[in-house]
Amino acid sequence: MSKLNTKESIIEFLKQEGYELTEKEDGNVLVITDEDDFTIFSAITDKQIEFVVDICGEKDLKKDKIAEVYRMLLDLNTEIQPSCYGIDTMESENPRIVLVDSLPLENLDVNELQISLSSLAQNTLNAMEVLTPYLKTKQ
Image (cartoon, rainbow, N blue to C red; front, side):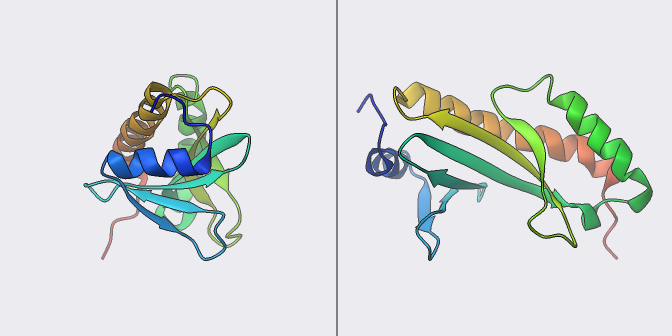
């Protein structure tokens, strides 16, 4: 399987690679989980596959450090490829820091998908390392 240009071929490949897959009720979001419980949310259209990893919410951060965190993440965006950090504001009371990536399906191959998934995992670990000093301590 060299080309992954359909939702079905991507799902088949991910299952072969050992990922656990769950489709959300609406069928538009695929939840991809690896053996370490690392979770990626994905949407697959006719044109591309999009990935989102939820890093943390603003409410998880020390309030007086939020601007510093965002500046740091924006700076990190210049160093990471192919993914980037962003803010998901769907939860208006607690915007989420996310890691995102997308790949066009037209000529998507196994190596590109594997690199993207590995990059998301590594960049999530890097984000957590950077964010740890800024997280509120749990009491």
